[in-house]
Picture 1 (cartoon, rainbow, N blue to C red):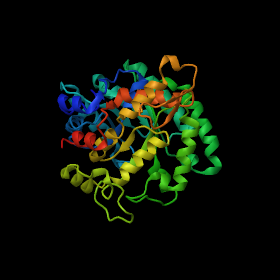
Picture 2 (tube, rainbow, N blue to C red; picture 1 turned 180 degrees about the vertical axis):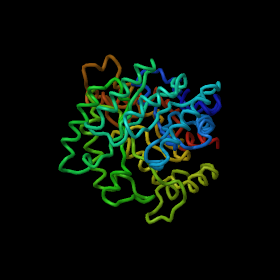
Picture 3 (cartoon, one colour; picture 1 turned 135 degrees about the vertical axis):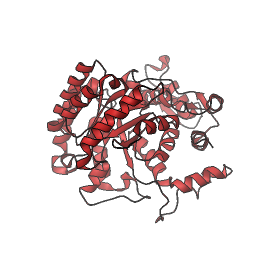
Picture 4 (cartoon, rainbow, N blue to C red; picture 1 turned 90 degrees about the horizontal axis):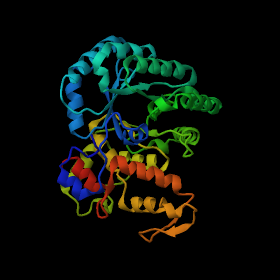
Length: 387
């Protein structure tokens, strides 16, 4: 599979200076963690789950979580497990492309049990999402993952979700982060990415952000995100990929604030059909949050609605200007440092301070490609939506 692989090759040729690479679930973890993109969650109880997976793959989804936790009721767990086993078994008989698939469990014992029950269909799985991850809960989850991997002969990754009250509350945050850092470092080869459970954070204070309000506008949440990145997202090779929080809105809402996108020159001269799409899906807040995710060191995003997937991917494509800067910074002859003028002649690139940024940018370029010089977000979004 590849990002934007659902659009015609001639369109990719027109849009990309460097196309996204093809990858499979057996690709190196470093690439997979960057290529997660918009990870679409689906309740495990959906009666046509196999068909849903195939459909979403055809629309550009490259990672999905099949959820047995908060998205279903406490009394539906057994039904959800049985449905998962049946649907993945049926999907395994088809000759179709599937995205990276993860199961979000509630308890550690579910990992080994589900891998056993899946039998040969375990080949479709990339791993498990581990909710409310702390040191105490995390170690049993990761031990179960190792046991399931050994029993199945299949490489399986973990994606812990950081959402516990101990992480949110100021008096316990530092100790909780240190403990989490210790356990994920111990199992580093099996931890693909860390996910942020911002909805649970908001719940602890009776908050819910509006459609015009990003996670970064809610200060108690913004501080937690900053501390998670500070401890767990460092660029010194001790850190992990940290994904952006879920965006809850997918319908037009009454606005308290001035629209960020439709009142700007961003769409002037662009297709009216794309303008209509943006209005229908109310994407202003989502686009702001994706940009703030990137500015704060996060990559990828949890999504609960298919309409969010292509915007996340379109904003993940590396611009031609970013690519030229990153490539110049990492040229072998720049190894001793120094300062150089950018190819676009609009900034100075400092080789040593910007090296880690350049390395991350080129990794993102592998996963999502590099846009041509005259191609921006609007064209990428339109192509991804088939407009």
